[in-house]
Length: 536
Image (cartoon, rainbow, N blue to C red; front, side, top):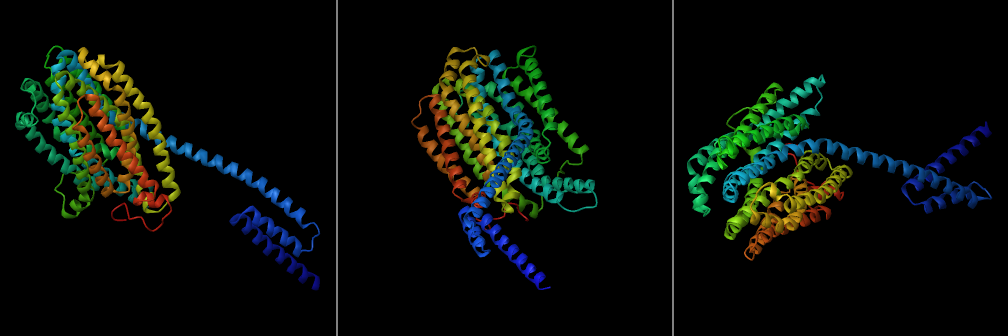
């Protein structure tokens, strides 16, 4: 019995000491573990304590190296899998976001070939009146994305009797959340349609457009403007597909509309109707109506179609949490584009046509960053709210890596298109010369904007609107000041590049230094991040 007691005591001593050794190895350094094993061997009366401890350390080191290698492989595999998942979503989404600028460039090509430099010059103020005004209301689609995403994924996590019931509830809540934004976009779209139909000449007079360009520009504005209600409503409907991570269906719809637009351009702009700028706008309007109707049909079939309604005070409040700050930010950015446009109008007809060509290329290529912005807006908010530092950092890092590679590659393609491909859009040698001279600056403008758009998505995910507005106003003021010294189209685009570089630099720096909701979470400052999702 005495021997059993001694044996039990010895075993307990061994176990306790082993636990302390394990804690020393896991929680401290290898040196601390070496000391612990040495002391343990001395307490057990072993004569070869140093040799034993050295052997244990070497064995632990070998196992640690194997485990480290294993964890590195697992982490690398997870990172690669995460990037693949991002790309599976981003590539189809990219096709969606590229559709409108692609169609604008197709319009430019038909107008440039059939009407000439005067037609391209007329498109410049006309697209400013249409696209910039529609861009002003882009905050509605962004608000719809945030509100619908919150409702959809919050309800998806609730415990219901079946997966089908959970999905049905998720779609119902998403539909209700998106209805206010959809209704507001439709109402303002109708107002804009009436305004464009009645006020196109006055808009051109305010912009001091050359009277020789009025006929073509007014025709374009009226054809495009009359279906503003469909264009604005479609942008909100598109966000519902994106929230449910279905980028394939809208891609099919938009691609079909693009084919229809090309056919319409050939018929209306070239032959047999030869309507010029108005024909190009009519083809775009027809394609927009078809794609909008298709989206409504598909969402109705899935029971995801938002309802037209007058939002109540609670819904208006939730919508204004997004729309108020985003509207101010959007106005600042739109004012920057308008300043560039006004400056380009002072350079003459060929320079204005060249500016329009390069601006359409810029708008087309910078949208390669938009899917990465959408990824940030859909993935980061829940991670920020729950203070998941490692996951938030991994997502942000992946988005930054992808945006950097995209910026370099797409910027190079934009440079080559302006340098070698301007002949596809115009046969005017002077306009081609303007595009070629702008090509190097276009590379920097495209690459910096793609990174800026990706960072922009991260800032919106953390609802860091105050900083976005502050840095936006500062960079806007900087660009406006530098524009006064510009005397060429390349110089105008250089101011845009400077503005976006400033925005991206300070935004990434803010996050990296631990400021803002996302920065605080990434730097491990738990409990300091403000809730990102309203109602959580």
